Length: 173
Image (tube, rainbow, N blue to C red; front, side, top):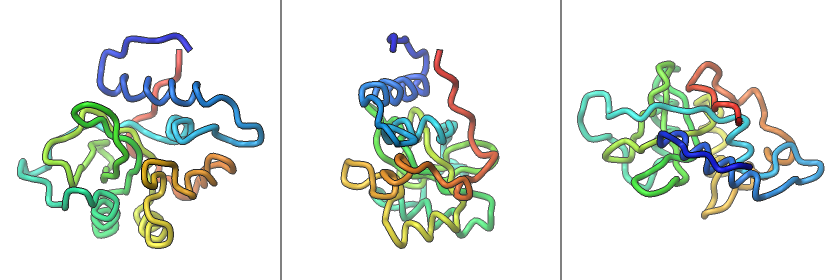
Protein backbone atom coordinates (compact mmCIF):
# COMPACT_ATOMS: atom_id res chain seq x y z
CA UNK A 1 0.00 0.00 0.00
CA UNK A 2 1.56 3.32 -0.97
CA UNK A 3 2.04 5.83 1.81
CA UNK A 4 -0.24 8.83 1.66
CA UNK A 5 0.15 12.11 3.45
CA UNK A 6 -3.06 12.60 5.43
CA UNK A 7 -4.14 16.21 5.64
CA UNK A 8 -6.19 15.74 8.79
CA UNK A 9 -6.24 13.79 12.04
CA UNK A 10 -9.05 11.71 10.53
CA UNK A 11 -6.82 10.93 7.58
CA UNK A 12 -4.02 9.94 9.95
CA UNK A 13 -6.35 7.61 11.85
CA UNK A 14 -7.73 5.96 8.70
CA UNK A 15 -4.21 5.63 7.26
CA UNK A 16 -3.03 4.05 10.54
CA UNK A 17 -5.80 1.43 10.35
CA UNK A 18 -5.16 0.72 6.66
CA UNK A 19 -1.43 0.20 7.24
CA UNK A 20 -2.13 -2.10 10.18
CA UNK A 21 -4.67 -4.18 8.22
CA UNK A 22 -2.27 -4.46 5.25
CA UNK A 23 0.63 -5.59 7.47
CA UNK A 24 -1.42 -8.42 8.95
CA UNK A 25 -2.00 -10.16 5.62
CA UNK A 26 -4.83 -12.47 4.70
CA UNK A 27 -6.47 -14.93 7.09
CA UNK A 28 -8.06 -17.67 4.97
CA UNK A 29 -11.65 -18.30 5.97
CA UNK A 30 -11.97 -15.07 7.95
CA UNK A 31 -14.20 -12.17 6.93
CA UNK A 32 -11.73 -9.58 8.33
CA UNK A 33 -8.03 -10.22 8.89
CA UNK A 34 -7.77 -7.91 11.92
CA UNK A 35 -9.53 -5.53 14.24
CA UNK A 36 -8.29 -2.71 12.00
CA UNK A 37 -9.98 -4.31 8.99
CA UNK A 38 -13.20 -4.77 11.01
CA UNK A 39 -13.15 -1.08 11.98
CA UNK A 40 -12.52 0.01 8.39
CA UNK A 41 -15.38 -2.15 7.11
CA UNK A 42 -18.02 -1.32 9.73
CA UNK A 43 -16.74 1.78 11.50
CA UNK A 44 -17.81 5.34 10.94
CA UNK A 45 -16.09 8.67 11.45
CA UNK A 46 -17.32 11.06 14.14
CA UNK A 47 -16.68 14.77 14.46
CA UNK A 48 -14.74 15.89 17.55
CA UNK A 49 -16.84 18.36 19.53
CA UNK A 50 -16.69 20.03 22.94
CA UNK A 51 -19.17 18.91 25.56
CA UNK A 52 -22.57 20.40 24.57
CA UNK A 53 -22.90 22.88 27.45
CA UNK A 54 -19.25 23.91 27.19
CA UNK A 55 -18.49 22.44 30.59
CA UNK A 56 -16.42 19.48 31.67
CA UNK A 57 -17.72 16.12 30.43
CA UNK A 58 -19.53 14.35 33.28
CA UNK A 59 -17.99 10.88 32.95
CA UNK A 60 -15.27 9.39 35.09
CA UNK A 61 -11.89 9.25 33.31
CA UNK A 62 -10.80 5.67 32.66
CA UNK A 63 -14.39 4.39 32.55
CA UNK A 64 -15.24 5.21 28.92
CA UNK A 65 -16.93 1.87 28.10
CA UNK A 66 -19.27 1.91 31.10
CA UNK A 67 -19.97 5.64 30.88
CA UNK A 68 -20.75 5.57 27.14
CA UNK A 69 -23.03 2.53 27.44
CA UNK A 70 -24.88 4.01 30.44
CA UNK A 71 -25.42 7.39 28.79
CA UNK A 72 -26.50 5.87 25.48
CA UNK A 73 -28.97 3.56 27.22
CA UNK A 74 -30.40 6.40 29.35
CA UNK A 75 -30.77 8.78 26.38
CA UNK A 76 -34.11 7.41 25.21
CA UNK A 77 -32.77 6.64 21.74
CA UNK A 78 -31.04 9.99 21.14
CA UNK A 79 -27.54 8.53 21.51
CA UNK A 80 -25.80 5.31 20.53
CA UNK A 81 -22.74 3.60 21.96
CA UNK A 82 -19.62 3.81 19.79
CA UNK A 83 -16.46 1.80 20.34
CA UNK A 84 -13.28 2.05 18.35
CA UNK A 85 -10.22 4.29 18.27
CA UNK A 86 -9.88 7.95 19.11
CA UNK A 87 -6.78 9.96 18.34
CA UNK A 88 -5.67 11.53 21.60
CA UNK A 89 -2.86 14.07 21.76
CA UNK A 90 -0.16 11.76 20.40
CA UNK A 91 -1.65 8.53 18.99
CA UNK A 92 -4.84 6.47 18.58
CA UNK A 93 -6.16 4.75 21.69
CA UNK A 94 -8.91 2.24 22.40
CA UNK A 95 -11.95 4.23 23.42
CA UNK A 96 -15.75 4.43 23.66
CA UNK A 97 -18.06 7.45 23.34
CA UNK A 98 -21.64 8.33 22.44
CA UNK A 99 -22.95 9.83 19.23
CA UNK A 100 -26.26 11.10 17.91
CA UNK A 101 -27.64 11.71 14.44
CA UNK A 102 -25.48 14.84 14.09
CA UNK A 103 -22.36 12.64 13.99
CA UNK A 104 -20.60 14.50 16.80
CA UNK A 105 -18.55 12.44 19.25
CA UNK A 106 -20.00 12.95 22.73
CA UNK A 107 -16.91 12.03 24.69
CA UNK A 108 -17.91 11.59 28.31
CA UNK A 109 -14.49 10.92 29.83
CA UNK A 110 -11.91 13.13 28.11
CA UNK A 111 -11.65 16.74 29.31
CA UNK A 112 -11.06 17.95 25.74
CA UNK A 113 -12.15 16.26 22.51
CA UNK A 114 -9.81 13.89 20.72
CA UNK A 115 -8.39 14.86 17.33
CA UNK A 116 -10.33 12.13 15.47
CA UNK A 117 -12.84 9.37 16.23
CA UNK A 118 -13.49 6.17 14.26
CA UNK A 119 -15.69 3.48 15.73
CA UNK A 120 -18.58 1.10 15.25
CA UNK A 121 -21.95 2.58 16.33
CA UNK A 122 -23.93 -0.01 18.28
CA UNK A 123 -27.55 0.25 19.40
CA UNK A 124 -27.55 1.17 23.09
CA UNK A 125 -29.58 -1.80 24.37
CA UNK A 126 -27.31 -4.24 22.52
CA UNK A 127 -24.17 -2.50 23.79
CA UNK A 128 -25.38 -2.71 27.39
CA UNK A 129 -26.29 -6.39 26.98
CA UNK A 130 -22.96 -7.31 25.39
CA UNK A 131 -20.87 -5.23 27.81
CA UNK A 132 -22.57 -6.85 30.80
CA UNK A 133 -21.75 -10.30 29.39
CA UNK A 134 -18.30 -9.74 27.85
CA UNK A 135 -16.84 -6.37 28.81
CA UNK A 136 -15.64 -4.03 26.04
CA UNK A 137 -16.85 -5.14 22.62
CA UNK A 138 -13.64 -4.67 20.64
CA UNK A 139 -10.76 -4.31 23.07
CA UNK A 140 -9.34 -6.19 25.99
CA UNK A 141 -6.05 -5.33 27.68
CA UNK A 142 -4.45 -4.02 24.51
CA UNK A 143 -5.66 -6.87 22.32
CA UNK A 144 -8.79 -7.64 20.35
CA UNK A 145 -11.55 -8.92 22.63
CA UNK A 146 -12.99 -12.42 22.21
CA UNK A 147 -16.08 -10.84 20.62
CA UNK A 148 -13.94 -8.89 18.16
CA UNK A 149 -12.04 -12.04 17.18
CA UNK A 150 -15.36 -13.81 16.55
CA UNK A 151 -16.60 -10.87 14.45
CA UNK A 152 -13.35 -10.78 12.48
CA UNK A 153 -13.70 -14.48 11.72
CA UNK A 154 -17.46 -14.76 11.16
CA UNK A 155 -18.56 -11.21 10.31
CA UNK A 156 -20.13 -8.40 12.29
CA UNK A 157 -23.83 -8.94 13.16
CA UNK A 158 -25.80 -6.34 11.18
CA UNK A 159 -28.53 -6.18 13.82
CA UNK A 160 -26.10 -4.56 16.27
CA UNK A 161 -25.33 -1.58 14.03
CA UNK A 162 -26.99 1.75 14.67
CA UNK A 163 -27.72 2.93 11.14
CA UNK A 164 -27.39 6.53 9.99
CA UNK A 165 -24.90 7.56 12.69
CA UNK A 166 -21.51 9.02 11.76
CA UNK A 167 -19.86 9.40 8.36
CA UNK A 168 -18.56 6.59 6.15
CA UNK A 169 -14.86 5.86 6.05
CA UNK A 170 -13.57 7.06 2.64
CA UNK A 171 -12.68 4.34 0.16
CA UNK A 172 -8.98 3.61 -0.27
CA UNK A 173 -7.30 5.10 -3.34
